[in-house]
Image (cartoon, rainbow, N blue to C red; front, side, top):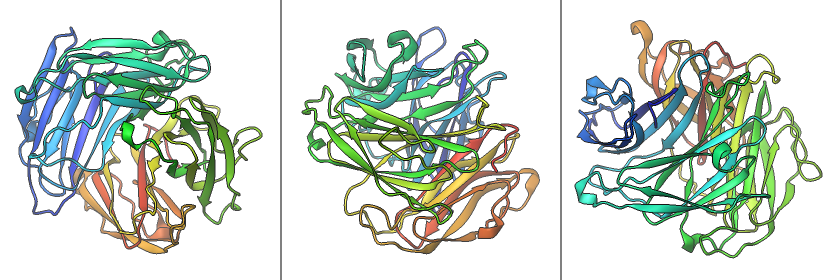
Length: 484
């Protein structure tokens, strides 16, 4: 997260537990200021009520919860909260006319205050980065150790290795002092690269990558849009099996387009044996489009394939225009990773400025899939200040992994406030058949599904479903834009 240069960051942590459950968050900011001096701030917020949100703007803080402003800060935040379940989201945007927002991190649950900070591995894998066409990627690696005296100080280096055709040679980055972060830009360290990046560190790192369109009329300082890409921790002991993944929501309908990235990361510096293989993609959509047969594509170790959903991939994957739903991916090699990058152009698909962007990491599937219903939480949604929020809810039962199809319904509840003191909408009961995806704008709702409009709402949403394997996502609609 950053409040330097053209960027600023807003962090929202939601307490979506029972309304009677209020508790605080332990917050640990670690990084540097604008002149490079270390910044370490450890504090407890005041209690966040059930149904409330701890909303922190780096430049302004969160005075109502005892969190000071940190202007000029760049680094990482660790939050350990006493309420469970919880959800958080961090939004980074550029300043000035060229506005851009992208998820910088999203976690479905937060640890309790009694739990120690646990970094599961010294190895990170960034599944996708690109400096081709008009794209660029920033990769951030952070050493979170040392600013809390109980942790001790860990200072070390990271070895980075790039994988794709024509990849540059490995490089060593560091040293990383306590709480320090290093940000690399592919156009500077690996020009014209597109592929995945593996990082092996001698400390427990955290990381983040941001894929962006960095140019408008030759002005590199004004990004048009961005995608947040969260890296995966790698456990060398878990790489022996084949890989099954789910992309819960993809769309090539109503002006949306999804770009899909699948990597064969069995070639890596983590001790695995490289293994060539193939992946089968199984599409699960609605009745508005004929069902596509499974698609199969070969993927050599150290390679990835990237394609647009509507266009497909020459000789391998059939294009799927006007498709909306989910895709199950089954690969016969270990260390398969996937991402779906979904965008919607303003006005028409030839407009480089995007109304909405969304990155979704493929969900790793453990078979058989769980059949216990779990809630879907949308940690921060807003229809204020000229922005809106697109909401997607998907019933992923009846998938390609053998899960029994289960029709059912979800109760969508609203926790937050309406601008100017209006009334928060009542709960909505939404019916979804197996494989169905429901998409609507927060400000408009969806009459056909009984979802009320919520103009001026800000807070979070929660969907409690009576069927298993419900999945959801949301995306910001840019100022002046409108999802059709």
